[in-house]
Length: 82
Image: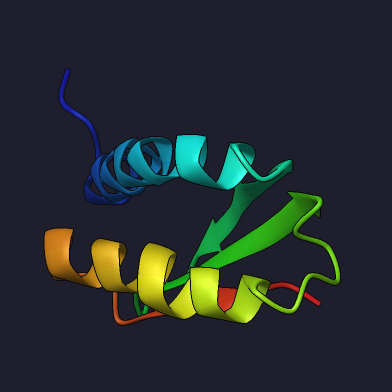
């Protein structure tokens, strides 16, 4: 049995997030995948030291979003849950 397209996309997104996660954890933070919309928008939630950190926006934009969009063309945007 093969993965459905959405499961395959989720698996690929999780794999990229797992590559990024150690550098975020070095600073006491973390994040979790909440959702991937049909339009390709990935929603994550920051955890730990990332909550309220002024650098979390840069981490989202320059680390997480850039890597996801580069490695997975179906990802159109990455947003953080409020």
